[in-house]
Length: 400
Image 1 (cartoon, rainbow, N blue to C red):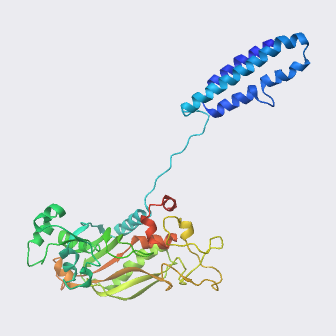
Image 2: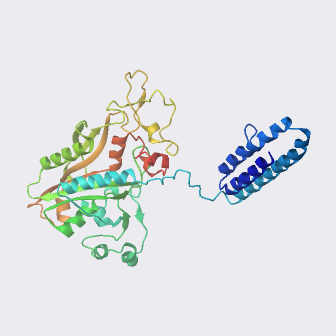
Image 3: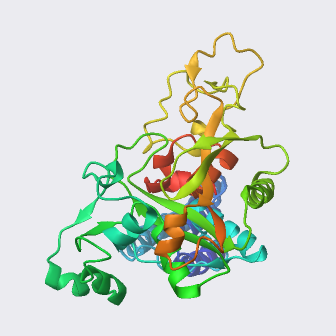
């Protein structure tokens, strides 16, 4: 039995010393000092079966070894905890790195860009800090137009002589000095992507077919459907004999591409200073299935607030109609109970806009349209608060 004790001593010291993690050390301790079937524990239990002479020789050796191994385990555990258990355990499965992905608005933007480029459109771009002339005057919005009021537009404070340094655009500087074209050199954060229509006509001429994705800024209160900075995608087509039929065909094509055949759309008269005639396209609200009332899943709490955008995931914010509408007395927060969601403004390009871009309206005509990609994501994915996209909530973004 003395030989067995010496063998256990050699093996236990080696196992404890080789333990490179707390879990491995616990396994070694259990193997040799475990109360149930530890190797040394088994020997200590057998002492009662030995003769008095043998117990005198074996007992002290076994007890000394037990104390020695316990001290070794404590020392090794202290070492592992001090070093944070940094030794690599090759037996553990590897941790896969989390895969990143694009923001949902970027995904939709790229999808729309791919769709329209396949339809023969080019992608145009322009500055986000614009002159009043490009943002308003050139788009048939004179100085008295209400959209130019401080309550609706962010104006950039700058001195006239520093205009070129702030904006860095020779075109804007030239027009700021041209009293015939612009009355004041004030700059604004563009309220829409429409100024790029003028820049595209100046740069590419006609015929022209382009889309204009970009960020816009408006001084307005935020709610479930509105933000003060948002993405917009605009389209412009100019050629000979362009009519409303071309606009409707283009709209039907990309609506079916994005939503499929199930989407319902309607066209109603509208007003935009830069188009004549003007129309607005509405699509059936996918959040309430066009019913206009908000319904909750049976598993969702009845008092969940969709405006608490920092603490809800898309799963909570998605709405679904139920079989019975008897208890559905809350209006859909997105369509406001109408069952329809304003999706896109459009119309034939106003002759004054064509003139501002250097195009003869007697020879050419065109159509323009503008939409928000966040509306597409909201409809397709069941998001009922536009503020979620800028909330930075990783729980929300991981679902796309």
